Length: 112
Image (cartoon, rainbow, N blue to C red; front, top):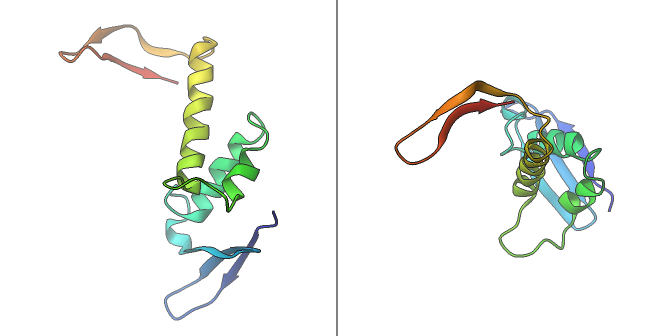
């Protein structure tokens, strides 16, 4: 599937329209572009995930997504999967080394 990103000037500022053969997918405002809720933010996340999960870009651009799925959720899921794989492979660092547990049973730590 071919996806095209085009920017236009408008009275409210620059707009970007994401289009494919089936028609327009998204209209976005650049000042919010890095949020995953906007097309540019989702595109950036998919580009970052694609080397680790080849084909995620094709899935994210698909017009045949199941009901309830959207491109933003696919971008978020790819990021979560990448993080989970790093944790499972023990290639992350945890701060602090010996974290405490809170009252609901969650470890109070930062994983990076």
